[in-house]
Length: 263
Image (tube, rainbow, N blue to C red):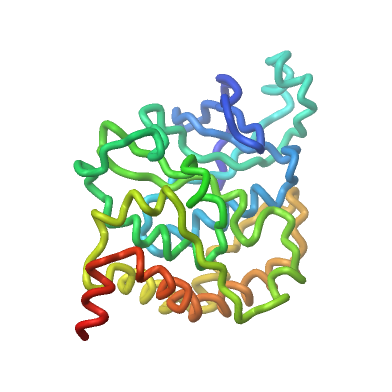
């Protein structure tokens, strides 16, 4: 099932993958990453797969859909014709008009779902989404709902290159991420064991869960089946090791650290 783009709105003002805003046949507006973006179709696969995995964990991620852009629509807009966009299937995430970057001095004290930040941090470690903690631009605050929402997973799985050698170069090694974005959430999520519910959820996923999440990539994106199988193995291997990486963060959480020491 995919959405069909019916109207071009404008390019996004920022983003390495040069996304554009389209209205689709469900009357919703989407930020669409195109298949001819600078990093190729693995970016589209990363967005689709990360979205589905996050949904398995009930994390607040932007709604993701495969978006059909027809030749007729491209021909309607001169600014699109010059971009040499191939007609076919691209990836879109629901556009949040009232969304602002959490890094932009957002007051999180009134955030209704701030507890999901612990899940976000665990999720980023599982899928090796290495850039959110430093960019502060891949998490939105929806002012009207007073909620955080995860966006932009182009750099999941070590990035869009899908380098199998890098995945398995040191399988026991789990990168540990920490930065200013994560730091903002410490006062709101620090407790005697803030990450355990999300780590348990990740660990409980089985091979069928992960394969179902990866299923459905369009043939047009030319993602080799062998690569998808490697990704399944990669995620299965890592899911039981995320806890060890998260344990390295304990010194950032005074309540958690004290509770662990007393125990």
